[in-house]
Length: 456
Ligand SMILES: *Cc1c(COP(=O)(O)O)cnc(C)c1O
Image (cartoon, rainbow, N blue to C red):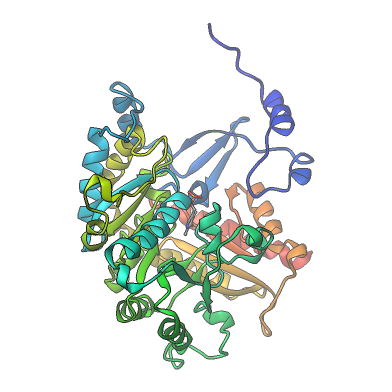
């Protein structure tokens, strides 16, 4: 029996009546008309009335090659002809096996094992649990090493462990009673340098307090969790070149595992396959998710080294097993489309073709950076943060309740571009496949939308 399609009007009513949206004040949401996306094509999202919008967030940082890519569409359909899902507990499946092999091929050298899950937060949680159990089993003589160091403004997901190693006050402070204690260090937020220094004459002086923490506390530290190169949810806080390499060296020196959260930066977003590649760094554990399936299916993985993997081997009765898993671990549909995602990288030479777009994006953003209410633009590859300020000279921020970012994004939406700001930072993360014309149009809409901010 074929169900009758609900009308756009009904969908809007039902959305207001039955749904609770993430990171959303529902009291406001229910007073506005929800935008309901029915289809997509390339860089465009299409709503129930047929109106087209450029997808300036890559559907929250997941889409890489555009919507309805034929290779990705086909991969899902072909896998469906075989099986949608079978468990990974006690069984295996072809796409998950093949994908693991491909991931190890492209991952930073030295990462050799893949542990699947289904979202970025769990990929991080798995890295944390692996780190703690590793030290217990592989190096019991090291004593209890179960504390984590991370940067302030860090974001690693919304589950409790991921929130514990995060530090976004607005999102995280109320859950404090549930969180485990961690150590925090100042991030290299150069525009608002906590040391009031300027790069490069600062010689990355912010690394000194980090070394002090490592020196004093390394005996209890299991790992240093970091978003390599770009702290995205912090508002695109970009690390200076060489910063990550120094962090790697410090972690090695003090015997602390480096946990790279590449959930946002992975899969070409920063211009290289992984952000770690810019500094030639291999982390001990690496979390990936968002771009893994090209934005098609929820899938994640935690990659690690042979050294860590070996720490979990033993006889059954030793119980060194990693006791962790999810119902949808190694989901064949997700793995099949992730494999197809990597095929596109090879076939379309995605990374090679990206560099000219990245240069153009930088060129087009330059006049935006000169606008009176733009403090700074931080771009790395196809990720850009545009920090809006009330006063350009003093760098005074807009108060959060002025909703500056939100207002600009709302104007941009009227002009046909979907953006999702983080506080006062407008975030532009277009699909890697965005054409130069589309990219130019996105920047043009952003410029015009910021312009209206001055009038209000
Ligand atoms: C999005 C994100 C996460 C969380 O991923 P989910 O799939 O939303 O759970 C973790 N770390 C970083 C850096 C992210 O950007």
